[in-house]
Length: 371
Image (cartoon, rainbow, N blue to C red):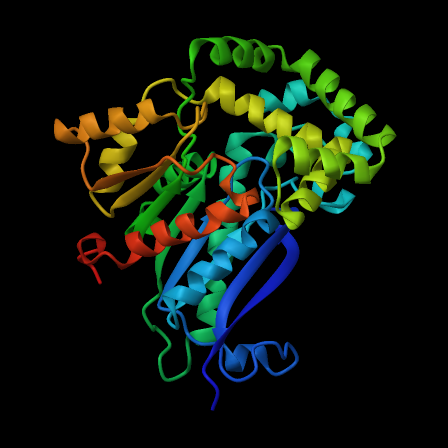
């Protein structure tokens, strides 16, 4: 019998009332590419599931190749589940129709649900947290259906490893703090360039804060400007600009970026959520969150080079200082000068990130005592 092979399966289904893109990456016995061959029966049972939460804009397609590489090198017994943000993707069913977008985002950002619309799920941090928790519930229920049998009706649930990028780290922290039982099931957390506090250099902070607090004016202006530019220029010309000027050498990454930039409602969803992040995230490290989580499982954090206004090097230094003073524990920070915050669209940066994740997962000292 051939060795098990990895297969990625894409899904689009309602999560928390919102059509959402997600992926499953598993090992399968037999021919992994034969999608018609009783997939559930051929799927290898995972004992550890990596739960991936992306940054904003939250399109899981950007990360699929990276996640496949991780699970391939971890081997049988591991699987990955990844999800896009509510309202982020392609198509009106995912992004929200023109009628949905006619509702006032001023009210929605104030957490007042507008009758007849569900945009508060997409446009608010709380909505995205609830959306991801509903999805994790579905992931666990899926495992129960597929792997609990009549002879093992109460088989122990798989352990979870939460993997996040950028603002996904903030979502992961608050998901686990809201659900103690989920935290107990978590073996490890890995954050890649975490955007968990808003404290960039003074100039960027001033500009971004002004934009975010004037969102009822700046969001229409910015989204309309991007739409006007991308709707008039040939797609090929924009592709060349992204490749040669911006430096996005990844063909797949550029295609996804073009899809995002050429849909005005997707731009709006990204900006509304992003500006709420700037307004709501704390300036200082939430050491209470790290302490509470650290009592149950370890956290590994990767910081990148270049001036990173979302996860600057000063944040890593502060975390290390808090650890040295025993104010937080069970946390590890690593710095890689060669990486940038948008590593996922730079092919040469994928392997170092994959290597970091593998090293952290395989390090014996990071394994939970509950295993």
